[in-house]
Length: 323
Ligand SMILES: [Zn+2]
Image (cartoon, rainbow, N blue to C red; front, side, top):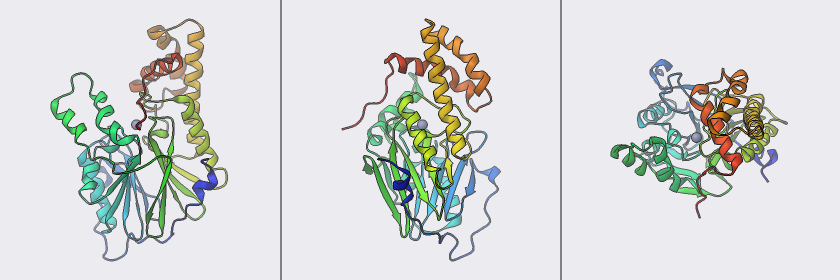
């Protein structure tokens, strides 16, 4: 079973080689980047999408003794190239790994930037097929040949796992572990420090942001989030979401609360005989009252209600697991 103990047995050297050698050039001001780079200590960095959403999602990287691991590669190659530039200001060590937390385009579109650097791309077993097929749906019926080609030519994960794996960067270790909920092929990356840890959650955690539920199974997702909050029972953990700022266990619990409220309110409207547009109209005011200030509310609220209605009706399409 996935337990706190399992995750926290990962040992990471507290010495970062990040600033060894030559003095690094002065970093560019954050305003020039599509993300804000947040150094978290111990060679761990979070790259948080800027307010304009120019990176499309969050990412991060970890500098170990003999190389670098990148977690997610943004929605476009220029943002990934900018991340590579920031890494190169920190260290000249090789980019050894990219972890794709899941297949969604906003987390994998820059894979090729790091593949060209020689990185092995690590992901859950379901990701390689979905990356080239399921991503097509985000462009709708009027997808252009160029967009289709972009999806079909995304750099593919080439190191796969079923439940978990461990990546080594010398004495530093990253535990990559599957959890259900968002797509059926999602992973977190756990980097243990002395008495705390950083957990890159991908889109299993959205901080004060409405989630994309297009592929979601919300009940297992709530169980996943309960597991995450238990991680913090013995030592502090910083959770890096796929979207939004880094958060703590309370933020993870609040996000679980969103999924729980949404299920409860959709279920209640169904019991009142509401369906489709009438059901959306019935649930939306409740949702807005409690979560109207969260990011992406206008974009996702109605879709979230419809997705959960379909899920509760047993008619929701979710990507099928790969053999
Ligand atoms: Zn996603």
